[in-house]
Length: 367
Image (tube, rainbow, N blue to C red; front, top):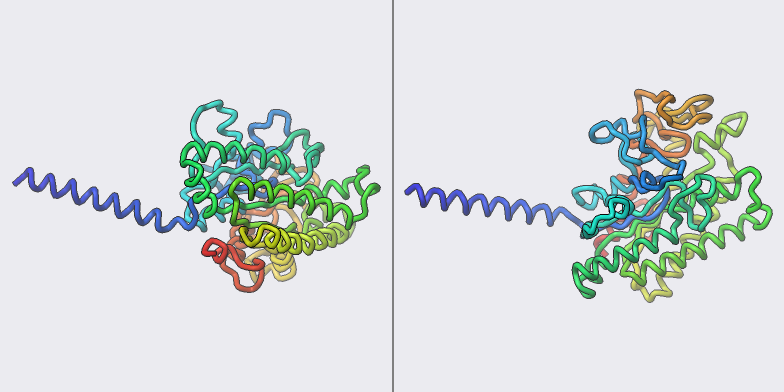
């Protein structure tokens, strides 16, 4: 009798475990996510860059993250990539690529994805010069090619292609390229008109997207550039604390070109590519114009920093930070708060109001 009961309990436990695993897999909308971009989605790659000054691995960053600890995210908590990962059912965000390389382990890359995003990164090589070191987009794609090879080793060529065709490729980049164009003392603006510069950005981005496609990428979340002229750092440069409209106009010019380029690239690849262009600019503009609709009360000043608009000194350990973080759009000079990132992802994931073109992220996954 006791043996029968033991057998029954063991079988029951197996059924529970199998059901739980099945449920977990059912909740996962994509097998993996691969993240490319800048500090808006960096989850710690820059922690491993010895001479980079674009780092966030110190307080007060991470004050609202699990364990109340800085992780290398330029935020009080989670960022855009983290919330996308949550939405698609991944247990945790794709880890930073350099955490594997720096440890010099022979461990295989996780089958659920990797992040290559790096604070200070741009579309162009060399965008990172003012931060001494980062991973520009071409280098990120180079690193991804090594992950692709690892996947082929783990899954076989056909298995890797199937895995990647269902995975999500998230690309959030371009803001640093615009900042470089307007940087004081820069020769870039003397050598190119705004339109010429934007065109060169789009040409370079298209080349990297084609390379990702060559290595199996089929579904892309591509973020447009936000209202960068409204960051606390840029407002602080104006006596009236208004947005830097020249930068905003150039962001809009880039975004229009990006939508056109993506449509053309999809045609060029004979439809063997799907994407959701995320209208970050339009959403941020809504946050700024009607903040109360989204629960915000502070649209100009950063939460963490020192000086006017808390934008004269970055969010370093000697800086002060606000207690009402969910009221603020901006965490520091450039980056949104966790609350802002969460609301943004909630909107773009399943919104039907054209914040995602030609489809939202939920529709992209199902495509």
